[in-house]
Image 1 (cartoon, rainbow over the protein chains, first blue to last red):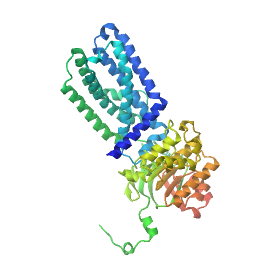
Image 2 (cartoon, chains in turn purple, yellow):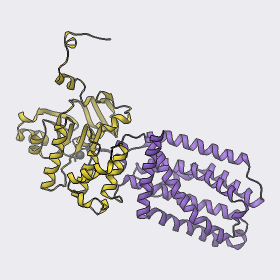
Image 3 (tube, each protein chain N blue to C red):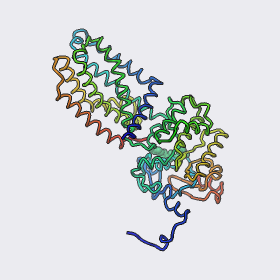
Length: 225
Length: 250
Ligand SMILES: Nc1ncnc2c1ncn2[C@@H]1O[C@H](COP(=O)(O)OP(=O)(O)OP(=O)(O)O)[C@@H](O)[C@H]1O
Ligand SMILES: [Mg+2]
């Protein structure tokens, strides 16, 4: 077990080192996320903006588009110069590659959220302090499931060589249940001031578990050098 | 069903034991891409410790065969076993015994030479990976560029680093797809010396090459592929370069 963990961290640390050096992904994703929040904020106008409902929905849009870019970029690193074949030759399980990539994607999405969320708070006058822990719990639940399928589809799409936008087209529909559950929970939490329901959170965690297990199993089958 | 013959009762000599479990055993190996058969019914044994050169025209199927042997993509038909273990569901331990130099360098361009080698060394659980990486860089003449990022390397330098990556874990079976492509004369010599050393260590080497004479000098055995089939299979010392060239041209 410790061996597997060490291998996963090795794969993921390599990704983050590459990202820290080039700052390619995060730079692009942060600009995109901020633009989405600002443009939608201005577009919706002051009335809608104040409701707090709009804020969570707009944030989700930013996370989704930013996330898909993260998935694409972290997989592109492996596609360049056949590096993925080097990983596939190594004496590690395919699941290690999947888990390593997933962690890299989650780390990037976390960084994205840390940049974009404060912008939304300012832009929408969104009162996060009403339920900060609930917000984090719902977001974390949403991110894990979304990144789980995103990591899988990024690997599948990049081996078909028809890139550019295709990933979003396949990932968004599949992640719809997650988005619906988490935005509904957010709206209740911030709009109507209901406490964070155990039922909602359980549903979210169940979705995450299903997405994680299925993606992990399928990853081995679709991975091609 | 166990058939006991007179032969199997007599004890095996060392030489016979090595041929008993070849490093690579192919039986009717065939591979299809879409509707086209790229490898057709290849049956070969590569004894442990041997040095084999695969020759053939462009598109003959050399790289496809090496990819199949490396278990990167499965054969459509036929059986493949490596060191006596079936390649259908290879264990990590079996993968650890393999090294591959491919058409693509399999390196991260944003990492430095040493970071790349240490990363792959750790994946293979190489002991003292930094030390080993420096040694390998020394061997391929890149010690002074250890800290440079790979994207700043010339093509030949990338190729040499890719060879160092493949040899980091001292593989028992090296699959080298045109390892000399893009190398200058001193590098060709350095790399052939590395391969000869590996072979002298009892490791198995399979390389593909377009230089017939060089292959006959380096390897013990030359196999010519043509349109996915084995055209000829000879001991290098018995082979005539002109004749082999004619077979390659087809
Ligand atoms: N991924 C692929 N999809 C479809 N066809 C492929 C693929 N890879 C190889 N082929 C086909 O398989 C055949 C053999 O290709 P391969 O790369 O093995 O040849 P090769 O002997 O290595 O040639 P070269 O000397 O040019 O390296 C070619 O006809 C090629 O078009
Ligand atoms: Mg080739």
